[in-house]
Amino acid sequence: MDDIRHTWSILYEQYLQNAVNAIVLHFHLFLHRWGGLCGNLVNIISIIAALACFGNIIWQIGFETTSKIAQVCISINSWIIFTFGAIQLYKLLGYWRNPNKTPISEIVYAIIIWGYLYYAGGHNIEDGQIMPDWQTWLSYKWVISAVAIIISSYEISRQSLAILTRRFNPMLIFAGSFALIIFIGTGLFLMPKAHVGDLSFIDAVFTATSATCITGLTVIDVPTQLSFFGQVILLVLVQVGGLGVMSFTSFFALSVTGKASMQNRIIIKDLVSANNISDIFTTLKRIMYVTLTLEAISAWSLYMQIGINMPDIADNERLFYSIFHAIIAFCNAGFSCMPAELNDAFLVTSHGVQWILGLTVVFGSAGFPLQSSAIDWVKHKIKVLFIQLFRKKNKEIFRPRLIDTSCRIMFWTHIILLLVGILVFMGTELNQTQNDCSFWDRVSQSFFLSINARSCGMAVVDLNMTTPATIAILIAFMWIGGAPLSTGGGVKITTFALAMLNLKSVVLGHSDIQIFGRRVSRVSVQKAMATIALSFIGILISYILLVTFEPELEPNRILFEVISALTTTGLSLGVTPDLCTASKIVLILNMFIGRIGLLAFMMCFITPKAHPNVINPTEGITI
Image (cartoon, rainbow, N blue to C red; front, side, top):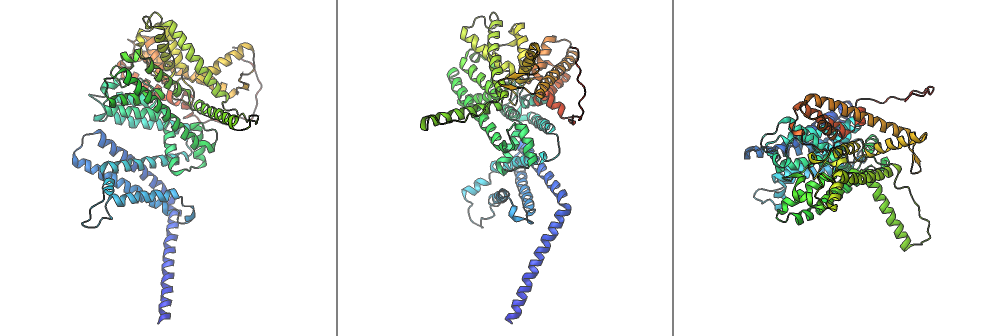
């Protein structure tokens, strides 16, 4: 009898094992045949669920809802979390064939989602048992919404990395990410809680574009026409636009997963200007840390300075003013949330506020390569000092080339233009806006105007009261702009520097450009000349269109607004709010193209072709 039971037990175990193997085999066959289609379908469902979560949160925040509708919105968020949990389980099933290669992060991610759903739903609470406080906290509506938005953000970031594996033009992805943020920002500004009074669709698009492209031109009065919620939306758009959408999503996705395909890394390396593929995550972390650190220092300094100059202001209002203007200054966007904007009396006379904002603009427009090189240089000097103090003083110290030629050109051009601007504006405005000012008032205002003219667009004086010479210099400075890979605009200071160096080499009869012990590549000079040519073409076309649409406006004022929009500077002579819809559309396109970059924008639609392996005879062209 025992032998029979043992035999049946063995047969039963074999049957179960065969059944499991059959199920796994059929599942693998299913994945082999339909895996690609199912994977694409799952990705589409993930994107739809994430966008639905964002839309649901926006609806709860921006629109007036009844308690019944609010409860429905919370239920939708719960179902969205459940959907992501089910999708994660499906993805884990794909590792059955080789479970040893299952990423730990994927398992932890699934445990977190299902653990939250289990405890937030109170499934482990027996009848008559009181739910613990920590478990009650998990079921609060704002906690559910927060969890849903975090998971949705992660899924969007993960899908953005998946998009980079496709054979898309990287510049097209870069431009598309900004277009998507502008579209979302437009919808946010149109919410009833985001604005006061009426806000037209074209004005919402213009404001969202100006914020995302970190320009600062505006067709509305930000302090009065945007509510506090609307100003927060504006600030978020500026921060996202300043750092770059792909930097945000790549950093978030790599922070959680810590992995990306080789193609991901190559594209991200080009987008964030990392030295090599292995330094991508380090570069992204440094971008985030440097940005947040400098903004925090600037906000704290402004908070203290505003408290000195405006002692009667409420603490929460002073804190918001400080954070707002610190982010705006670092991202080089010319917005202000103060009632009188930056023409407020205390700002005009406060040297502390002007220098804090001005220096913040300087650091933001310097560009990440220069910021990173400066950090490496300081770290190296500290290391050298440590070796000399605590080790052998005659020890040979390796001296790496920490600051390359590009960063040296950025630094010295930045400094020269800043000093030239201060001296020029002190001279042109001596008998105008600085007529009754002391020497230090003139220096402070000229410094603020010099740095903001090239990148930010904030002003402590009415530009309509300045001299024609000042306006001409402002146009030239706006056109030059800030450093590459910075929050500044314009054709970039390296482009201007290469143009001047090329002029010098031509005049002196040199065959190439040499500076700081290096010879500048011909490709760099060609790109600089192409960028300058494209900028003049863009300015000319936009100027002709606006002159046609606005025949009653002075041509020089139209030219000023066109250059300010295309260079994403944000300075204005006050004519932008009075423009017609067609003119606003032209400026919207200018801001968008200016933020992407004129040359990069053309590369979105033109595929580079391989150079033919034929060298034609050289022939001179009459100039």
